[in-house]
Length: 335
Image (cartoon, rainbow, N blue to C red; front, side, top):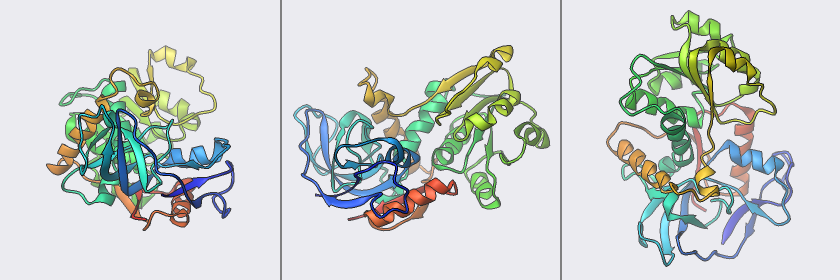
């Protein structure tokens, strides 16, 4: 089968060997696995981080977002059948989705939204799971709840921020504030439903004062948390909540004590990595997201379509992500 992989970590994305096209053997499904023929994928920051830092002894296929058609099922599969159109984000400990055929556990998979084409659906799984778990699992916000509370999303124009803004606005009563630094991305965040948009290249506390908010009860920081940490603490109300997904080299949490602030970390791969008892929650939430898409409550977060799934186009996608200027999700489709 066709696949795209890297053989050596740490190569700049401008190096022709950073990602390569190759042929690999087709995989065989385990008991709970689906064998999926990949139709479309999207690219995430985790792809670039692993390519840059994870050493390999054999080619490693990246990619943790996919839409495809079930070709075969394992002996214990009960949720899907051959021919089903599915979408999912996969498992960080297994080969990625940048290949013609891919294995995924049925418990982290769902039927794709019926109203979306393959590329538009491929933009959603990883970011939807991350955003849902951040808001409802980590921060403990309830659907329909949050009256009188406020949520600041740092980096709201990116992949996770684009779906998180919609979830918070559509499924809670919170006041939603998104941050973005360019007019184009600020307009994008407004279009996703944020009540307010601030510029995170400026002082965050001062920006909140500018829009008449002052301090917020919740912050979700999606990027550069370490460089803004003091400002985030200042921007939170006493007994507030801070959640993050990025990877600060160090984080001194002692200053949070004075306000009795709580810290929450989210990694959407935790359930699949540890085969948790509630692993099927990701099947359930992706099913719910598909229903919300099909009913018009949520919309896809595609920013750009980069064409066919091959090394050259994936390198372009990685370069854009590494520039920090991506808006929404980058998708690719077909081999």
